[in-house]
Length: 429
Image (cartoon, rainbow, N blue to C red):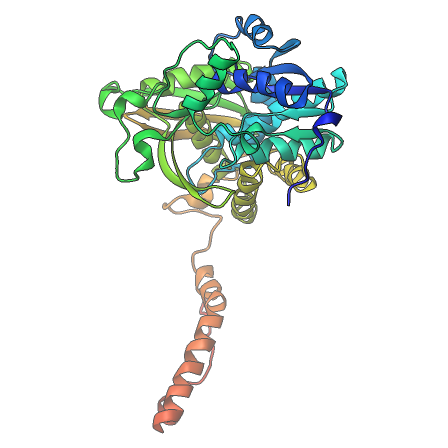
């Protein structure tokens, strides 16, 4: 059972604030129900919204002050590119755009709360979603003394109409009473869409819903090529030119969106136990993931590459579940760092009608050896060696087959037909 917060003990709260209806109402609701000072916190993680009007709006709704921070460079370099190097993709499709942003935002909320001497932090996440877990686990990991207030788990407001009525009754200025039929989350990495017609899994997503990408059918009829340069697994160059992490993602979003790249429609398993349908647009991220995977194909040995695939699945679960600030994630990053020390090179990508295909790659650390792989005559690989290798590699299968034959023969009294286990001598010139 959840621990009840003593409202009288809360004197100051830092609220994750967007300026929308829900968080505007929460400012007033916190003051009314907790009698506390409310400080708003807004993180710019590339959501593309105008944030300059927020200070006036926050104060007008009852906040004592507001902090607005540009976290786009930190988000790209310290979070998104770590995610990229890990290879993490949730349930084979989701590039974790919303999931990866939450621990960063919560981390900075905790810093502001400590700086301002706050007793608690608050968020506007609903009780059905994953974000409540991601925010609150981060707070627990970074400052367990802070209380967490989640109004959606306490108040009597159950709909947008209820929230609008509360805003009107408390003279809270809200910009509009209209709402998109979709629930969206946007940042530097992606744009997600949920709700509306998507709640019926048999409905195809409406083309007018998409905002970052054109439909593949409407994409240019000619492919576009680009080159991505990596150093230690970090993408650092676009077409030979050095570029900052945030600017690289922005540029690739524009290019990829033009070609209809990065659309995903999936039903995923939420941490809270239910299935949920989401449609995601991740143009730049899709290009980067494809390029990074391709570079790993020539720079990682077989066993390391295959084991990294196993780790990537677990890494994706940690990110999705909000377990960024955990010893396991730090340990996994240490493994990833070792795998990326030779991940330097260039990948040429072909973008066409919704697809991002790696068509060429090179690296000074490539393990690909043309002399070994050629179908022509070579001097480094004796093909006759393959016979002995196959004999030993298949020995367990042969032993099992002879066992099964003996078992079957014993049942039917035909033991004379069972071969003995033997070895063919490999003849060599």
